[in-house]
Every structure is written in structure tokens, then in C-alpha cells.
Amino acid sequence: MHHRYDVLVVGAGGSGLMSALYASKNKNVSVAVISKLYPTRSHTGAAQGGVGAALGNVSEDHWEWHMFDTVKGGDYLTDQDAAEVFSKDVIEAVYELEHMGLPFSRLPNGKIAQRKFGGHTKEFGKAPVERACYAVDRTGHMILQTLYQQSVKSGVTFFNEYQVLDLIIEEGICRGVVAYDIATGEVHTFHAKAVVLAAGGYGRAFKVTSNAQTLTGDLMSIYYRKGLPLEDLEFYQFHPTGIAKMGILITEGARGEGGILRNDSGERFMERYAPTIKDLAPRDMVSRAIYMEIREGRGLGKDKDYVHLDLTHLPREIIEGRLPDITDFARTYLGVDPVLAPVPIQPTAHYAMGGIPTTIDGECLASSTDIVRGLYAAGEVACVSLHGANRLGTNSLGDLIVFGRRAGVAAAKYAAEVGYEELPARADNFATAEIERLRSGSGTENAARIRKELQETMMDNVSVFRTDETMSTQMEILRELQARYKNVSVTDTGLRYNTELTEALEVGYLLDVSEAMTASALNRRESRGAHAREDYPDRDDDNWLKHTMAYRNMNVPGKVNIGYKDVVLGRFEPKPRVY
Ligand SMILES: Cc1cc2nc3c(=O)[nH]c(=O)nc-3n(C[C@H](O)[C@H](O)[C@H](O)COP(=O)(O)OP(=O)(O)OC[C@H]3O[C@@H](n4cnc5c(N)ncnc54)[C@H](O)[C@@H]3O)c2cc1C
Image 1 (tube, rainbow, N blue to C red):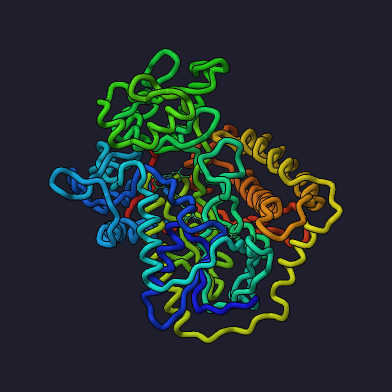
Image 2: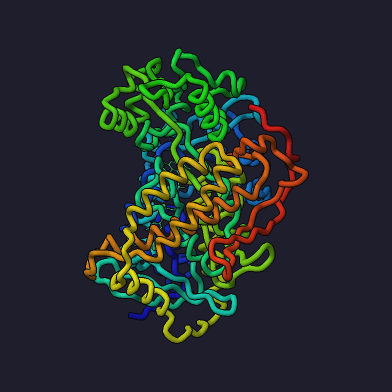
């Protein structure tokens, strides 16, 4: 089957829908979205705590303060042109969502309610500020529903439950994508003038993660397999408060509302690590502090491997009224009522700061200087780089609406100006062959077993703390798993809803993204943001104030070539990061 749309968006989370909606406002172009999930099942719908914007509804706030916090939170690896555009535009973008009908929580005076979140401060670091706009603890759900309704109203066409398997790029120009219709098993070719990648993150590379089952880095991996670069993959965020052992997220909003972390003796240990903003320090610092407490024997439980999130000093109305979903999660999954008892938590793999490198208009970079024409990216799949070495809570939802919109507008403008490039003959050859190999091959390996080994070893070796030794070991493990992956076949050879097949494809993506990530982390010999090396514990601006660009070596399997890209500095000079 063959389709043709001027602008094609891959992914129907917040960034994809924002791109599609804004592209569709340009009435000279046709717009379609392809998503392996039904749109409202995208992970954006799981986002809880809020979207940060300096509205100043509760106390004084300014976009410069937000920009400063974002740059400092990112340990100065943030590109400051992106941070400036973001901090200004996110204010207007939040009001736009409000006017589309998004049901934000409200203050008694009717304005959008705002609460505190990690790393968001007033007067350049003096004290926490209320900047997170929220709809109780279902902010992402509300964003997704609102944007889906608006996209349908605006005439966007949806191809739901189509899994993209390949990008068609010839002579540096993107010409479309190839996708697998999960319901029928057919392969479809989509011809386009511009493609926006908005396919989300890859938390499923790790054993304990807050990420949905489907976050497997598909489009990052497809991009990387073509010899194109992935930027700053070594910076992977562990969120401090996942439900112990399970990884299900307890929003930082819980600490924003006054929750406190405690060790085995009930001590509020963050006072020692971040004396000014304590439990509301950025996530990289809090996750490291939890690991240190556990390592020094101050953890709780039989294995002394978790700490407590204590909300018991807060009024019941705050806990149940402003954090209803996570109250439910703790009661359901742990049998713990947060109103009465502290909740066992441990860091959980959460967010990719790195991804497909883009300009501030979402254009994908083929190197530190050149773009791939007709190809755009936004959201967690992309690296613009707003989040630098560590993202602040609430800045991802803001990223989706600001840079999703910019990518959609730029893609539509480009598509309205150019004609269709020719498609290569049999553009679907690669995808069809990949499916056939898995479906009819005689391989003896099982994809689920490989995924389990990958997740366990990534959790141990490329975790909150890393060393040369753990990461070199992981590179060896990855080479072995990749070799075994070549010998995978599926037992279900059916055409309809063959999830064994689609999941086997996803394991392949996870392996390749993990390769780029581990190689980038091994290469960076300093500690910065979420990348904490025990063998190089200090930040080293003289040698490492630069972005990593990881390219797959197309000739030597398992080898990754590393290049670099300058950080865009500006208003804020790199300083030691104290909170
Ligand atoms: C539990 C949780 C809570 C969070 N809370 C917050 C918060 O409060 N504030 C905040 O700022 N951030 C939060 N985050 C982070 C934020 O929600 C995500 O980074 C963001 O939603 C990602 O949006 P996205 O549009 O990039 O991708 P997603 O919403 O993940 O959507 C990805 C889309 O890509 C599609 N896709 C993927 N692969 C393919 C393929 N091969 N073919 C076709 N389609 C494909 C999927 O179908 C899906 O539609 C949270 C994250 C989690 C996991």
C-alpha cells in the first residue's frame, strides 16, 4: 500500500500531536500522524506532576529565572539559545492549552494553580518557586486528550497501530517512511515532503523504569543505523522516586507539595546534600544521594535497598486532593497508605536527555553542521539540547509544546515550498526483509530472553554511578547480545496483531540505542549532570564542555565513532553547581 501526505508525523504523544496540530494550521499542506499506539495511549498521558512556566500566579516569577534554572539544572551543557526560546515561549504555550480547554487545577482566584518542583527557583537559586502548572497529578493525560481532540478537529489524518520500521532518506533528503500495519501485517510506504519524528524515549533499556512497555527508542535507533548521529546519549535521567522494585513513578510533585525523603533512622538526609533547597534539588543529585545512603548502609527493608518518601505530615486533603493517582498507586501496588505511612522508593530509569540532534526549529542534524532536508524531530526522541546533562522536572512537557509546535510549523512551511522527491524503487525492501527474517527464519534465539539480559545488565553497568570497568563490560555484553539477536526468530508467524514480532523488532532497537549510549558514556571522562563517573568524579569544563555525537561505524560491527558539537553558551557562565 502506498500513501502520500505533505507532512507526516511519527508519534502521537504530546510532541507529535502539537507538531501535527500546528502543521495542519497551514492550509496549504496535508498532514497525517502514524503511531504504533492509539494516540491517547502514548506515554505523555502518564505524565503526572506538571508543566513548568513562569506565569507567576502564586509568587513572583520571570522567564529569566526559568532559563537560569534550566541551564544550571543541565549542568551548563544546555544550549542557551534553546533555553531562552523555551522559557519565553512556554508561557504563551500554556495559555494556549488553557484556551483549547485543558482543565488545569485552579487557585481560588481562578488562575492556573502552580506548585514547586525540583530545581525551579526564584532570584537565580535563592529558594524554590511555584512554577509547575498542573491538573492534579494527571497533567500529561489532560494535555494528550486536549491535543488529540484539537488535531481531529483540525483535519489531521491518523494511522493508528502502524509501527514505523524505516526512514526513506536518499541524497540527504528525507522522502517518507515505511510502516507495518499491526492489525493486518501489511507493509505500507508513506511518501512525504517533510517528516517529523516524535517517537519518545527508550527507558525500557533498563530493568527498573517508569517508562511504558513501548518506549524502546525505535526512531533513534533507525536514525543511528543509517550512520546518522545521536547526541548526548550518556545523559540518562534516573528519577529519585520510583515505587521500590517496580519503578512506577511517584511524581516529584509529592515533594513539591512538601514530601520529605528519609533514611533508616528517619533523618531528612537531603539537608546534607543540598542545604538550600533540600528535597527539591535536581533529580541527578537526589538520585545520587539516595544511592549514597543505601551504599553506606542507611537504606531500609530486608536488603536495605530503598529509602522513604514521607508525606504523613501533610493534611489528608492535600495528599488525596492534589495527588490522587499516586495515592492510589501506593495503596494498590504497595498496600501503603501515604496519608498514614511513608512510601518505599528507589531511583527509576526515567528520561533521555539525549537523542536525535536538532536545530531550534526541529531540523535534524546529519553532523555538527549539516541538516537532513525534510526531516524534523521534537520531544523526548530529540536533543535540541534544552536539558543539557540533566532535565528539570516539568521541562519535558514544556519542551513538547514549545519545540513540537516549532517543528510542526517549520515542517509545514518547508513542505509548502518544495515538491515531492522521487521514491527509490522498492522503498520497502529493507523493512520487508527484516520482518521476513524474524517470521520465517530458523533462528534459535528468543527476543524476550535477550531483552531481559539487556535490561538487567544496563541497570547494573550503566546506572546512576558508572566506571570504565562497568561500561567496558557492558560494551562486551552488548556485542554478544547483538550477535545473538541476529539469530532471533518468532514462534508466532501470524499476520494479525503479532506482538511477538513487533516486540522482537523493539528489542533490536533497544540494543542499538544501548550501544550508542554506553559508548558515549564510556568516552566522556568527567562527571556532569546525570553522568556520574566514580573514576572521574569532577566536572571538567576545559575538556568536556561539549556535546557528544555518536555515529555507528558502518564497517566495523559494535564500533561507535565519537564526534563533538559546541555548546551554545550565552547569558549564564558555567559555575560550580551548588544548591
Ligand atoms: C510516568 C511518567 C511521568 C512523567 N511526568 C512528567 C511531568 O510531570 N512533567 C514533565 O515535564 N515530564 C514528565 N514525564 C516525561 C514526559 O512525559 C515525556 O518525556 C514526554 O511525555 C514524551 O513525549 P513524546 O511526545 O516525546 O513521546 P511519547 O508521549 O512517549 O509518545 C511517543 C509516540 O511515538 C509513537 N511511536 C514510538 N515508536 C514508534 C514507531 N516505531 N512507529 C510509530 N509510532 C511510534 C508512540 O505510538 C507514541 O505515540 C513523565 C514521564 C513518565 C514516564
